[in-house]
Image (tube, rainbow, N blue to C red; front, side, top):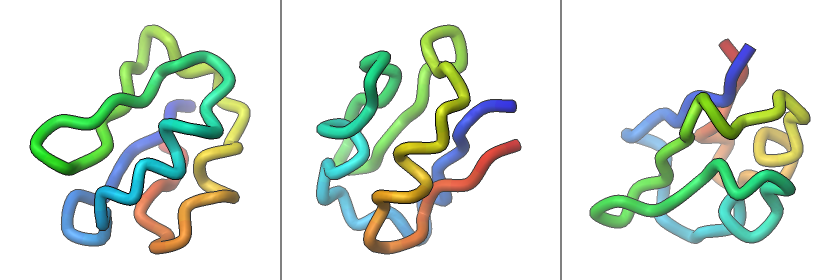
Length: 57
């Protein structure tokens, strides 16, 4: 599984970038983007996202 960002819900707050232990999340045009090669499926971003814009697939 990998974290996936719902671009419609993402507010660009960067909380996920700050909490990701593998630095798999970056910002592009104000929206969080997950690098599936770096994602370790820990779900920390899912738990911490204040807008519930991230889920696991």
